[in-house]
Image (cartoon, rainbow, N blue to C red; front, side, top):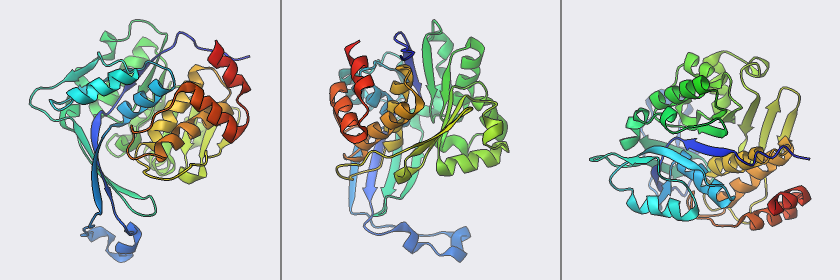
Length: 327
């Protein structure tokens, strides 16, 4: 019934970071003057500060490990990473291609979230700025691999696209926050030949503006466009059909940090299983919801069976997934 890619190995490239998460009790929008946006000078008094393990690639890998995969995480970290490495290894992430840079700190994300769930963020690259020193050609030995090119040092992202294309290795193009830094031609080249392009709604508008292409033209370059829409779910656009994917209702809303990374992990797991796109999208939605319900992007825990049972409760179509669990 399904084209199960049973021998598919997953390589996740991108940021590995610590998250410094702050909470603002008001709404950011109430403190910006529309006619002064070219001269912003505003400070927000936050109510809390928490340090958590994060980074786009590490978050995706963590969630994939919960879903029963053993993803290979590729990236550079600083001298402060030893405990984090042990935690990732313990949950099932392959960490042998994470390299430490002496005299550097691990990359750091600083996120401030308001009552409406909006975020203002900054990112310190730290050891990550050396990411292009790692070559995928030294890691990938065959083509039974799916590579995720997630937000990273821009030079490394360009390099990994080039390496995947030259080795004819399937990859997901997930430029995210680095759309701002990458040129239009680089973004277009990254999309060309990819299995999927994944962005959020705002990023997609910026992406289209920079590459000067719309849906139909982009689908000549990539097989599938996936757009996350926040609390409106997501949209999966293929060359044959567009799928509207609903959200998985959360039991509680604690912290949105890393929700998109959870979505990507569920999506990748469904794709590896060879499921139809509507199943794949709903798996992404549910994986995202687990993140939303906890404090920090790697604070949640569940088994694959727990995931399947909750999928059944929310979407009512898990018999096919249960059969896969038994294989």
